[in-house]
Image (cartoon, rainbow, N blue to C red):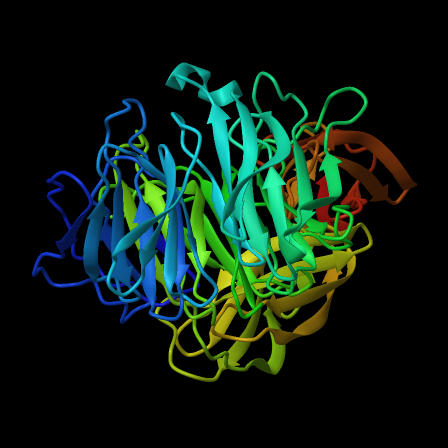
Length: 580
């Protein structure tokens, strides 16, 4: 796994489990070493080949991950239970009923799970089960959420997997202990997400029967279910429809983040689901949004994606979209990490100290649980000593080095810090890219200014999850024209009868000339001054002047080039004594 802006990660022990037995089984974890999250990222291999849900018990520090295993009505389900360090504690296996949809009660005492034909509750310390309600048979997989102390879940009306994508799906609940049909329904695998303030989100995935899917907010207070704001995203031409993969409330419930496979991470105001005034930057090029989650302390947002190669699959960054601190980036690659973050595959601990993210391989038949710890402390950084540049006289079209130093508090970073640079000239502001800070804090910005005049260089350190941003540093450089020169080789003496041949070379520094230089030739003798035919230099800069002098004695030939917008003028002279 390639990473940027973060400490080294701890290689994980692969945990495998043999799933066997009938009825409800609580299997003790094997006595294999655990993957302890001593570094920022620990990884465990999940003991199943499908995925349905992830839930976190913050009271007892437990993580519950469920498989899907739909496709046959006698399939059993699996819930793997880990602690916050990645050690597998138990494996719960259900009898001939796949499991999907998980939620933990507010007090951490119960884990609720949606099974094929019932909703069950498990004690989070003893793992003993009770059946909460018998419900309509599910062949596709449920969503489940707890809001205002009530349980809400979806039931797709389908009798085979082939119907699941477009199945009519009902929103139901167990309200005050009584199974309830809410009356809300639509097509597809409707997603549910509970949030602060007695609110719950429902979102619709894109499918053949829902070409303009919705997101809506429900008020779940007092055991009621009242729909509030709702939004569809396609315009009048049908463009811009939502391709929903995940959705989440911010910690304070004022914002909604949506993982849209088409548009990336949308940030909405929860009250009316309008676009927030400031949104998040686009995901890296080539990354498709798959998952999203806010930390419980309100500090961070995690944005999961599907990407290839070194393109990040996960960004962990400040939840405030106006905060430009560079994100913690994770690129998952291969058999030790998975290849991408699964939809609905991320949850945070309540205090924001850990992010739990599920990844899968390209095929989608292996799964991993990542336990990521963003740094709890940020340190200051600052530029010192201003900026210098070389050469002292910058010229258009030639390399220029701008140097400076960035100091940072705290421990030395495991990976080099990066600074960002821009150049502002008469043509506007130009992004120069990022440049690596060496271990001693020094850095060099390389540029080739292409315009004569003042150029202001601005260097920024945007910070990362370990370091706060530094105040920008600037310097203004006067960029001059690139010099040119003309060299002549002429005979000391020549005759009027044999003529004169002068050879020469024209050189121009900086940016290459758009066309070959045309040189002006002026001859001065005792009869006066006159202009001869111009000469065009060859591709290698050489040229030849041939002339039949008209007078004896000293004849001076002056060769000149007038310059252009980026190059200075140049001139050279040669004097020849002419005999009869």
